[in-house]
Amino acid sequence: MTHAQDSGARPAQGGRQECDEQLALLRGRLEAAHSTRDRVQDLMEVVMSVGRDLELEHVLRHVVKAATALVRARYGALGVIGPDHEKLVQFLTVGVDDAEAAVIGSSPSGHGILGELVAHPEPLRLAKLSEHASSYGFPAGHPPMSTFLGVPIRIRGQVFGNLYLTEKLGGAQFDAEDESILATLAVAAGVAIDNARLYERSQQRELWLQATAEVTQSLLSGSERAVVLGLIADRAREIAGADLVVVALPAADRDSLVVELADGLEADRYRALRLAVSSGLIGTAFTRAVPVTSEDMDDPGPAAYLGGPTGLGPGVAIPIGTGAGVRGVLLLVRASGRAPFLAEEIRPVLGFAGTAAVAMELAERRSDTEQIVLLEERDRIARDLHDLAIQRLFATGMTLQSAGRFIDHPEASERVERAVDDLDATIKIIRSTIFGLRTQVEGEGESLRARTVRAVAVAAASLGFTPALRKEGLLDTQVSRFVADHLLAVLGESLANVVRHARASRVEVTLRTSGREVTLTVADDGVGIEGSGRHSGLRNLSDRAERCGGTMELSSPPGGGTRLVWRVPVAGRQGRADLPDGGAV
Image 1 (cartoon, rainbow, N blue to C red):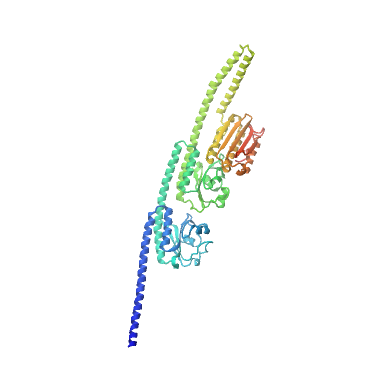
Image 2: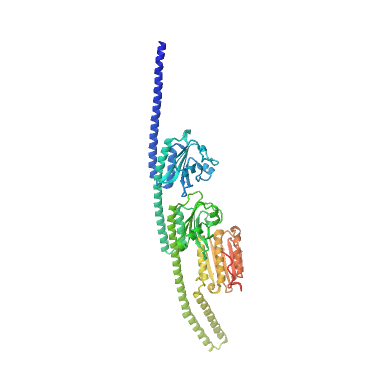
């Protein structure tokens, strides 16, 4: 009985066990189906939320955060591929805090496993990262990572970037369902990113149009060229997202370019810098009249061209104007580690630079018109002085001379003669003034006074303020062309030294002639000689003074700053006026 009962109980027990196993299996399948349904629901919510945002940076961060949550990964990243389709130019992460990122160092550029997806844009799922042939380890301080899942993000058939996920929570491996969910998210992300980029471009176009209208309004209001260039540089830097903007214009000989304006990161070191037109980023853009880009301005080539390591990142040099009408170069640079300038970003800047070229041409034409008006006014004044003042003074002198014969008192007669002599001297001064009004400097078509004003105006754009300028004496008639050329070179280099070294808030320029000597004085309230490091650049100024038969003095007044006095004979050294110009500014 007992045996019979026992034998009958065993089949019942086995049936219950089998039933429990079936129930557990069914429960597992139901839970998996429920989990899959929940994940699909989560995926749909993520897709909808990603599509609502139109700010590109926000969309990218939203995508990588959503991907990390959907596949339950500890770490996630989104790498944006550059225009060369070989390197990552942007790398956004989740799971790595700022302290860890600082220890790791610079963002990856697309080597190892990350580069595998760049070279072969197909989903990649690994149980162990270190076992893949492309793996070569992690940098010091990098958190350990084992499991891996990566999928490409495509936009209109072109690979935009890749999603990278590592370290699935709970120690499990990424499975086919994770891969499917991530691939679906990548498709939705591609659409959302494309929409955000289109929106960003439309916003950029609107900003460029507003900036163009602002520049045009500035032109029509008669603003000076330096003001218009400053406005153009400011708007270009702001809209293009640059950290540094530089405007370089050709020197008078067009054999070099001079940085007339610099604003932004490390701008002080580039102001008044003289650059070659035959090489370098800016020189190539100027000579070829095409945009020239650099992925890293700190590379040896671009860095050497700009005078040493820059600490800067990607840059683009945009010609101002086209063909033979290139009037300068607009350089935009981003900080190290930022994304390079893309073709769609460069095109509107190129059009905006065309506005800069028009601005410069209009400013030059307005200057020419003003010069013509000035010359016509000078000619009228000269005619009036000759036809009215001199004739009346001459007639008065003749009358006094005739009247002197009827004066018997010796002292009165002497006074009349002195008055006649004074009138004669006054006539000579007026004639000299007339000659100065009508004389133009050979070749340049500008007087020394006008050239001095222009040199000070050029420096004002870099200084941020206009130096005080005082002119005394018959500069245009008494100072020889040889001395004038050297004087202008000394003035330009002195002001460039102030821009680059002095950190001054006030500059005074005085130019005077006594008839025998001409003296140029440049005084600033900056850091002074010891703190400026200007000694190496003063030899050329001293050489020019010696070449003209004069002297140069440099001093630091008690109140601070620097005072340079350059004094030479008005005709230069006797017998040396035909020497060639041996120094470069």
